[in-house]
Length: 159
Length: 286
Figure 1: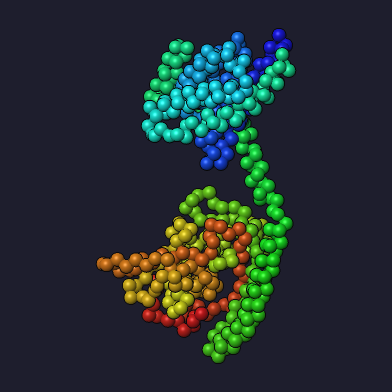
Figure 2 (figure 1 turned 135 degrees about the vertical axis):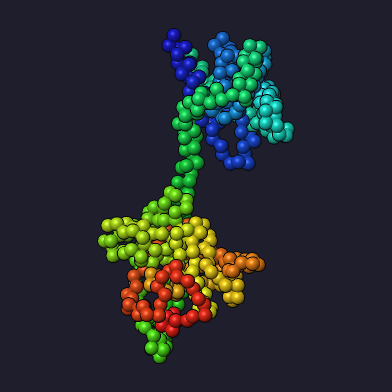
């Protein structure tokens, strides 16, 4: 029981830290490159604790991101949900991949996430489809080993 | 999965067409405020260190520049002594009144009126320092305004750009007397009753004329910015850019003039009084 609770504390802390990072705007020219950190952390938990975290977790988190970021409610929720669903189907294989393969797969997931949220944005506000929507996938490749490494270490220690 | 997708679509629809989700959004947003503050901390720290930790070389350079500036100014002050002696002699020849001796007191800006149309600032000097109502206030570049209320150790200053303010001025080159009114815009004064025949150009410097007895004469007020001649109008519309940095200066000068009371005979002391450019007061050729 106590290990379970510790794990939950870790999950909540990791998500809070991810939210803090997602707020940090940084320089405006780097804005397009900002990786969806909350999504990456959520994906980590979905992939490595699949019995506990499922689609409802992803959906709730997406909704929270929507409310906090001022996006139309349901946009990130839907994108999180679809991405999480796809991640779940890949879960069994992904765990055996090398970190490099994992990164590529994560990039693919981020592209899916970006496409869905941008599509919803276009449907609601209109606008133009830009190549910039692929940048977060590239930056996610760089960030994923770090997230997986740190969370993996903390996760194993808490078990 | 499908249920969640449907829920997401429903939420999108609701959020797009109603305001039902606004309270939730506001609540979550305020709950996230500490996180936002936390994420801003690095940039706040950077800003703070930028302001507070100037590099030594920057300070040295600054010091050097200031020293040079002081030297240059001292040189000019020497000339001023010479000029004021000469001026006094000439005035004596004209049997005009003595040159005004002035003393200044440096004051710091400690507050600005929150009403955008009320150009009023608070300074950290008051009755204890001898500040009085009607006292002229300058910055490094020109006249800023006048004291309108005095407390024990702070006072209120109305800027010349306030829409309720007017100041008697003269064109530096010709001495033509005019009145410059505030407009409520820090970058713009307006000249009142300028006849179309008046010889006035853009960039003409306007000095305080000293009429009205409130502001001392000879301090720069502004430069003519635009002149608009409209056919069928009795007067020309002239706007003036104040020389003082009305919305930027932090350190102001309070002017104490030891005025020999001016014989009021020939002077039109009413600030709002009509101006007639053909009339010249001999008593006040400043």
